[in-house]
Amino acid sequence: MLKLYNSLSRKIEEFEPINPPFVHMYTCGPTVYDFAHIGNFRTYTTADFLVRVLKYNSYDVEYVMNLTDVGHLTGDNLGDADLGEDRMEKADKKEGKTAWDIAKFYADAFIRDFDLLNLERPKLFAKATDHIKEQIDLVRRLEKRGFAYQISDGVYFDTSKFKNYGKLSDMDQVKEGARVEINPEKRNPRDFALWKFSPSTGSGSAKRQMEWDSPWGVGFPGWHIECSAMGMKYLGESFDIHAGGVDLKQTHHPNEIAQAEAATGKQFVKYWVHSAFVQVQGERMSKSLGNNYKLYDLMKQDYDPLALRYLYMQTHYRQEMNFTFPALDAAASAYRKLLTEVAKWDRPEVGCAEYEGRFLEAINDDLNMPKALAVVWELVKSDNPTRCKAASLFRMDQVLGLNLQKGSAAIATEKQVVPEAVKELLAEREALRKIRKYSQADQVRKRIEELGYEIEDVEKGTRVRKR
View 1 (cartoon, helix red, strand yellow):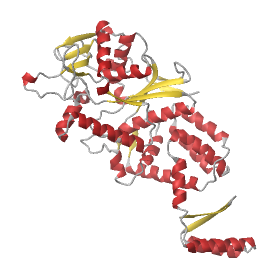
View 2 (view 1 turned 135 degrees about the vertical axis):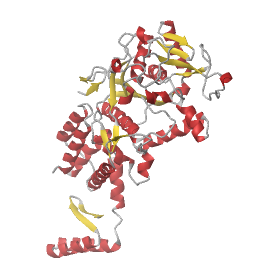
View 3 (view 1 turned 180 degrees about the vertical axis):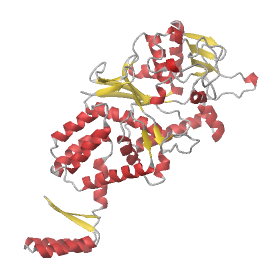
View 4 (view 1 turned 90 degrees about the horizontal axis):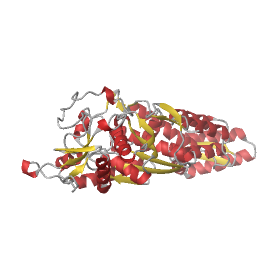
């Protein structure tokens, strides 16, 4: 039985989908104004592990991830997502491109990195700008039900009318004006924008590139409305799992819940799964510190993206992870060692039930990937026949996502290019073994090793590979 920590109940629960064996899952994706960094990708890799674990448990998964390409304002960094500049509009000024070009470039870069980390693609990468109608329709539903009101800069959600607003977070501890200026027009400090009006061109403000007509005037959607609208469109008004980073637990996700449940009167999502932050060398990750590493930063130093995936597995997703290059080096070495070991094995046949059972128990224990990884290495080091170990390990890799079969085959091919001199020595050794001159055969073996190759006698003959 799969068990997950539900941020909504603040406890580990047995997973019971709304309509088994189907599972509908949504993950908050990136705002595509810059490259996603390794902290972001920890969140997306956690979501990937969850999708794979669900499938490993024979669930039929419908998976959607959004790409925010409008409406996410810079004030979010200061505690109020309704203030500041639109991140897309700001990026276009910095890079000298249109906001639309910025969105396409970074969305394409994100999906490229997504594939390099071997993350299973969702059914859809849903873009906010492709769903303006759905967002407007949802705001109109809220307006009709008395949850929305209009002020000078936009249409806002009235949080005082939604019972248990902020139940996912500890918002009662957040005090108005602690980090941002108070908007005196809002009815309540925590009210948030559903639709923002474009600045008037008469005021000297530059015209927005991303804006649309609406029943309330020309403008653009608030950041939070897209996920409620798109989640309900593709997964239903109530669905099973919503994943994302712990930074979204405080405001964005509570606002999603408020919008959706106020409009439908139904529970929006049953299980909320949040992954913890990544620190770098014990410090928070930020542009100002120059430590918000991107995947290409690591690849420029010849790190395999899957070594980073392996590193993510070594810390439980709900624990803060400390990224260091020595830790990445160790993960890269362990991953290479695993591939090299598997490259020696015979073709997979019957698996090792005991290890597969322990692996399933680990992954079903709130995605305990560190424990699952420990089971993997116990299997690798066991005395079971390699054909059995291979069968089990390749099944486990459906969750690990380390491309073990393909990667180990590449290493085996790479190390099977044997010089003629070594081949001649191998033939000589085999001839000596056939006539039981084992001492002389051992001398030939030493000569092969001196040439940089090692040999292993297996059930089906002799295997040779470069050291």
